[in-house]
Image (cartoon, rainbow over all chains, first blue to last red; front, side, top):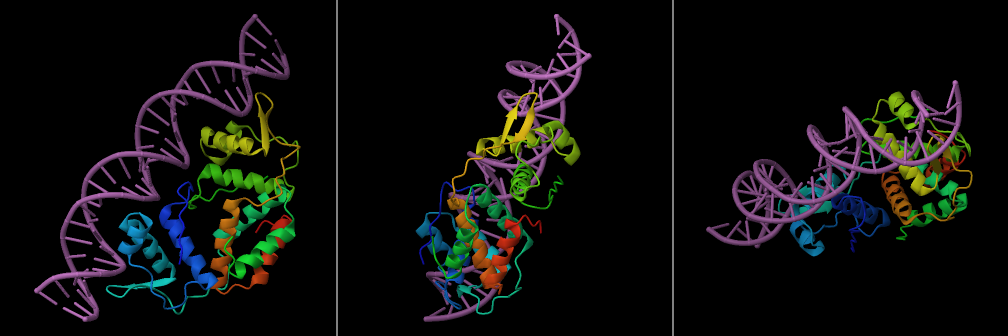
Length: 124
Length: 124
DNA sequence: TGCATTGTATTATTTACTGTAATACAAACA
DNA sequence: TGTTTGTATTACAGTAAATAATACAATGCA
């Protein structure tokens, strides 16, 4: 899986990494049980620090997306807890995005089209 | 207009304030030409620092949402620049939200329903 | 003219987070 | 035994956020 980090973004690297993996799981690019690169390999490949990758893995583990095991490494969880609800934080974010789009003259259907695309795993 | 700040949020106060005003404009609660509280009044009312409010106003001014004038104070712009496109940052955020929702078992229609609600100015 | 109010600028300080770096440790496996 | 894994620790530098205390420029009003 290709992971791209935006150096100019104000989103921390470990969060961008976490987000990319979550989106990879959703799109099906990362399948249940699939092995993730070791923290050292991924850090080397991305040119970032080992602890930064570890921080992303720890977050993903806490959130229930992956499971880690010494020597086994990190893997995508086979059974991810489904709360079947949008978090309050995501609702607030969504409302902000809708508001900004609406003010700037974007059609509502365009937002729905984006939902459709991202739901199907579209990447841009 | 009622402005609520979440002390526990990891979103900076000045950004939360900016977001609330943007959402207020979108929902119609804040109308074009309407006068905003002075930075000192709003800071006092919200129990935050004057410069924090000023930072939010400066951001809103830079983004074209409001206009400020000494002695006139801050007002909602009558003509807000419409780019008619969703920013790249918002697209990435939207994709993240869709991904998290999908994994957690949320129905796609539920997201579309949220778009509808927020588009119409719903507040939760 | 004098005064108050407005957004804004400046400087300093505290606090927290981010990212890196260098190690070290415990567990598991060949 | 030795290697690899995630993880923990400590230290450091950089940045951002928020507050605090002032001060300034522009405007309107008495």
